[in-house]
Image (cartoon, rainbow, N blue to C red; front, side, top):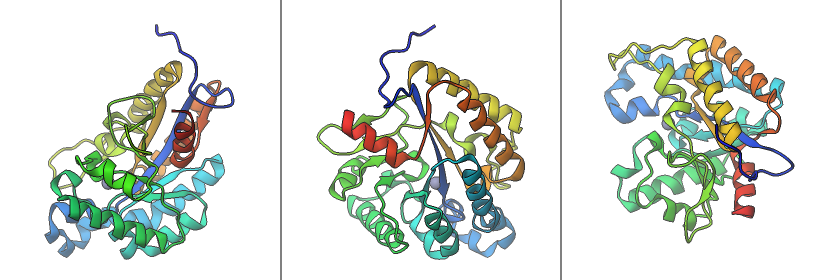
Length: 270
Ligand code: ZN
């Protein structure tokens, strides 16, 4: 049994949770195989995100009274502006998830800079002040942190090397770590092309996530749940998410807020 050390969180909180949603819609599929644009049936699984899932998620967040963070692909924002507008109008944080859904580690520095700048411009066009970034596939490159620092981005979320926020040395950039364990795609995600029938039950995912939360809470850590509207935005899974949040709140001193708030707190104290 691990003894909790002094809390790094403010106002008597013992641990923190961020609900995050990656709005990448069809971009991961198109990035992997541009020919899928000719397959409307295949892409309909992605189109569920802006059409149905985003409104359901926004309703749920309002009921729960939780501020969340949406990491949005720039190209998806261009193609599905109504969904982005709804998110911005709801007051939730909007952050960058690249311009196209390609791994930054496969880009040159200039290509990655271009991806970042285009996305900041597009999301800024919706009136969003963007201060956060998540690399597609959690695959930051060797240049990512420097580019974020140069562009005044205050945090990244996607490294898997810690359970608490940390500052990248020599920069103003805070990392809010996540992990595949807390990513819905790796456990709920299923595409007809990948040959993997891995549709988990809600009970299974809830158990994985609440077990990890309880242990992180004891250690005073941070749980960044990385979800996708087309995955967790299915009706039964949203009910599971609501139950999960309710159970988290039964723990003394859990702080559930958006990434921007967590990063600003970390920046002020680290
Ligand atoms: Zn993504």
